Every structure is written in structure tokens, then in C-alpha cells.
Length: 126
Image 1 (cartoon, rainbow, N blue to C red):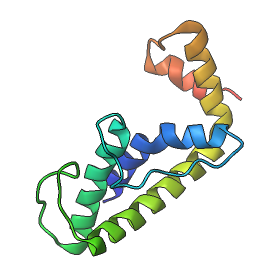
Image 2 (tube, rainbow, N blue to C red):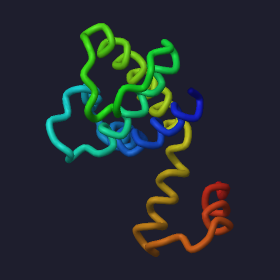
Image 3 (cartoon, rainbow, N blue to C red):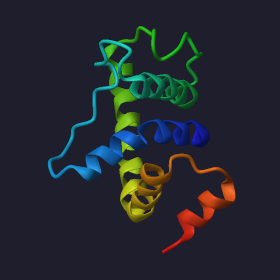
């Protein structure tokens, strides 16, 4: 569950970075209110949240989060898990905002980061 939660947080980090960067609060999309494939991160997150829900409740995996059919009670429970993931992700983004900006600026100026050691130095630089 912890590993799946981290996967969901990675999927939502871009969304939370956008929410951090704009002065007006951006509301997270409802986990089940995605009409097309344009928001791949939310679709992937929905799949992960479904797996977390199944592990927490003992429910067998029954397809993927993209194509599941569940009742309102399950949708509500999954949305609660999702809100927790969004909150934890936002806290991490907020705590690491200067580093996120530093890496983003480097990528804008120089393109790719060629190796892990370079990325580590960029992250650790204060």
C-alpha cells in the first residue's frame, strides 16, 4: 500500500506543483470525473487508488481503475484515499518547492540532466 501510495503521489506531483504555483486554489479533479484520456495522470492514479482500496478492504482486483464499475460507497471511499494522496503530495511539493524550482530552471536552460550524480548535486545544492 505504501509503494502504491508513492506511485500515486508521483502521478499527482505535477498537478500539485501547478496548484502551488498559482495564487488561486486549483481543485483536484474528482477521481471518477475524467471524460477522456487527456488526463492520463488522473486515470493512472485512479488505477492505483483502486488497488489500494482493494488491498485495504480485501476486495479482489476486478479490472483496472480506468474501466471499473463501482457503487457510490466504493467511489466515495476511493475519493477519500485520493484526497489523502493529494494532500500528502501537496505537503511534499511545498516542502521541496525551492528544489523543484531549481531543477525546473536547470531543465529549461539546459534540457536533460545526463546522469544521477548531476541530478543529486542539483537537488542537494542550497
